[in-house]
Length: 90
Image 1 (spheres, rainbow, N blue to C red):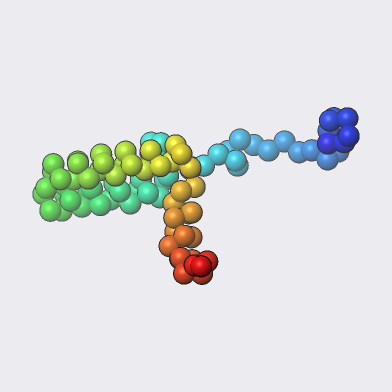
Image 2 (cartoon, rainbow, N blue to C red):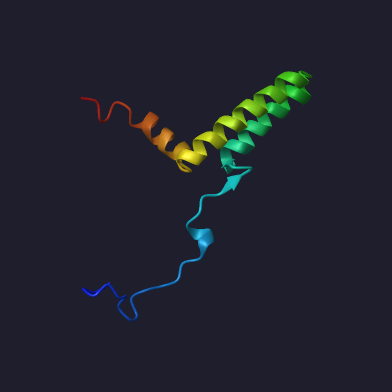
């Protein structure tokens, strides 16, 4: 933009909305939703603990959706924080 607040001709590009929005599955981050569903299915089908599998899935997915509403990139931020924990210690 120039001083008058108008865009400069030739220096703007339309960006598709899919490139800027996070990839969510049921409101939670896709990777976390897949891992959560896989573990819940292993509990429910593999160990034949149906209620424990359903409770694990419901609680895990609810927490993932709640966290994604606050910050859709919370999983990447958490992984980076855990990896670099001692790097920035005072």
